[in-house]
Image 1: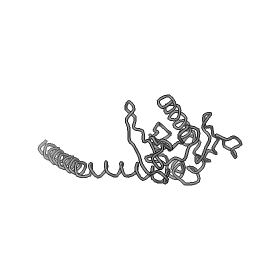
Image 2 (image 1 turned 120 degrees about the vertical axis):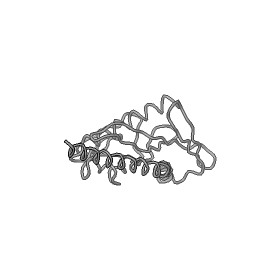
Image 3 (image 1 turned 180 degrees about the vertical axis):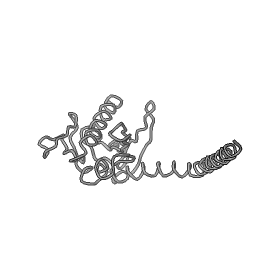
Image 4 (image 1 turned 90 degrees about the vertical axis):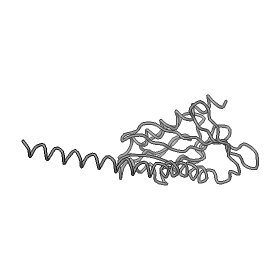
Length: 181
């Protein structure tokens, strides 16, 4: 019986020390994590809209929207679109023109999709399909080569991830139209 108490006490003490060290590590890294998230957002906007000379960050409800200016004229919008996918949440930066008719591009900010399959949504060839994509009508996807103006080709073996990106974008573009127009 004495041996059981001794082992239990030792294991409890080890668990408490580990919990304390994990909490300390998180507290130390929390500020840097937030700074990196903000930097990833800004880098995405700069990459997708390099011609932007000025940005205004505004809140609409609980949503953040960036108004993008080129030579002091409003040229488009940037927003973070997020939603569920196969392995978790996908967050992406979306830059869209002033008329809300064409996507200038997307950049994946966070994703926990399956490595080697769903993670291909982060690859250039997939994201490039959205550049200048006409979104007057909802975006669709196909497993074959796209035949419509607002269509992309899904990733083979990761149709759910591709479908999720399309669904998230359609939902976000519709929200933007309702808030802006």
